[in-house]
Amino acid sequence: MDKKYDVDLSVVVPSYDEEESLKELTDWIDRVVSQTQYTYEVIIVDDGSSDNSWSVVEQLHKANPSILGIRFRRNYGKSAALSEGFKAARGKVVITMDADLQDSPDEIPELMRLILVDGYDMISGWKKIRHDPLSKTIPSKLFNAVVRKISKIKLHDFNCGLKAYRSDVIKTIEVYGEMHRYIPLLAKESGFKKIGEKVVTHYERKFGKSKFGIERTIKGFLDLLSVTFMSKFGKRPMHLFGALGTLMFFFGFIAAAWLGAKKLWFVFHHTNAPLVTSSPYFYLALVFMILGTQLFLTGFTAELVTRNAPDRNKYLISSTISAQQCN
Ligand code: UDP
Ligand code: MG
Figure 1 (cartoon, rainbow, N blue to C red):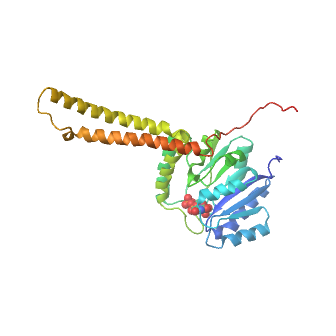
Figure 2 (cartoon, protein in one colour):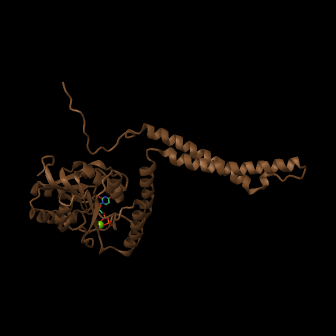
Figure 3 (cartoon, rainbow, N blue to C red):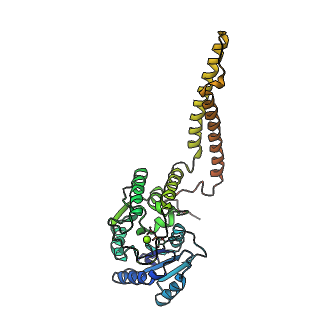
């Protein structure tokens, strides 16, 4: 095993009120990984469960010290759980898996091979045959098509809970808010290009019920806008707001100039000039110029915010060659 890592594999399991599943899941992971030569740890992140999950985790750890746990004081959401799990993960490969037994630990050896032998940075699961209600699968198809188009990453199932990563990837990306749906995008933006997918077996939920409702689609799309905005203009907001603002102000100004010129023409030719306010262009000109100025000012404000951001000059460096120091 690589000396840099304490174990070969970390399995990170975000878990919210899943007490019935945890033992079966960890037994299954143990059964599968024990048949390989890999050392492993399972990190169960209890996302503020109100059931008995934590005492189950404690018992599991007593019986098998490879099973570790992190417990949130309250429910923060799946992204937060993944983020803490990633911080704690010591493995060379990190696999995430839902706690509800919908993802199959049988996929672990092949996922490990894809990362370690085939050299993928990340493999995303693809629930090709999916055991979920239509209310979930139809929005999901649409969602995936849009994300595929915007991100240009050729994956069928961005939001699959079962994913495998090279350690570097999860130590680099920052999963916050509800960004767990966009981990492949975050990885790509951080320069990890070898992203693949593997068809995985998906099971019906055995116990309890889904923790996400239909509102996930709306939140998902809003987050998609944020991710694309941040990746493109996060470090240079003025380029977006300034361009939009200038464009709007320009159209407003043209409309105002046209109205003014027309008025003057009427005045000089002693015809009965209509009031400028009687033209719809007057109002359009006003709105466009005000909005344009505001967009511009938003751009300046956003620049001030990014100037103060602690990571404004943080870049991801994968390797360096520097001069030997002689003393
Ligand atoms: N989950 C979590 N915190 C939450 C909601 C969900 O840790 O606030 C976990 C949940 O316990 C499960 C995984 O995230 O292990 C996926 O959730 P779920 O099965 O409800 O999602 P679905 O399968 O419906 O997409
Ligand atoms: Mg599930």
